[in-house]
Length: 386
Image 1: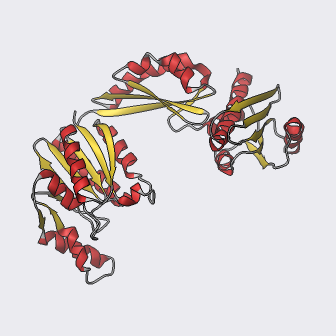
Image 2: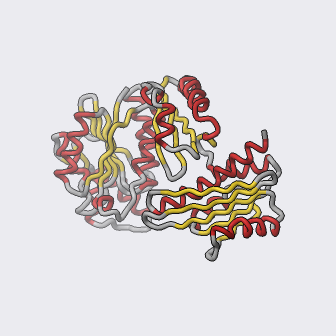
Image 3: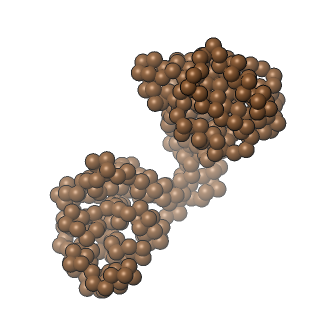
């Protein structure tokens, strides 16, 4: 199977003025085609450095995809850089210029600027991909068994050209039949190190592969398989997923698009419980995610005057006021080197009190505390439903 590298181009990316979303989108597209992606690179608007990066990538990969640097301004250097990388000159394409003029006319401009002509310049012998949603054409330069594919940096333009032109090109040129399927299991209440100890032997597999990605209070276990069809890839994943589930048990709360908020509320609804959530020290972002997660939420209350010793009484009063069956109370003191969580979990059957410390950054502590409290409630609901 062919391999690929992605090069994103733009000094604004290196300065942090813009966030690169193109790489993730292209990576997912390559994954679906069964193409291996081993490296991505970001380069500023410098012709020599871009050309060097492309040459190096072509030595390692069959497919090099660049995004950005195809605009009409002087600091859009990708055309010249690709030409240098493959050892050809650039050339002006009159037919391409006519198409650009027509496109600009659709935007209500009768006369394009002189600098716009740069977009009709491409490396010699390049295959031009007409851009139906912008003025910057994309192009492909083939060399030996490999190719350089240059796409605009504007995300919507890049995505359109990638799906409509690049994917069919790659499928035909490389006779692509394989797919890469991915299953992601979400784990809460168990640290990355503990998970690694339990499934370390599975992480040495070659197909499927197993890897971990840690977040604050949640760890993802990724299982990826390559096969000629989605069905066969799923068959490869199934026994490995079953083994991971057997080893990690209830710590796995969901898979793929499942969220801890939605899963917890669903468990509560299955028990006929409505939830109230009382918090001090959490970010509004976490609580908003809970509010948007689904039905079964009676109330969310943020406090600024809570004391840990008064948390249970305040939470019980809130539960009674909203006639809810379940309640989560969180008090978090967060500062560098001093993150302390007090949590109370109330259900019709039990009262659970937890106290935990966290050694990371205070901002991460808020997400960690939120996930921990939700997971304790999920486990209580699951235990009650047995």
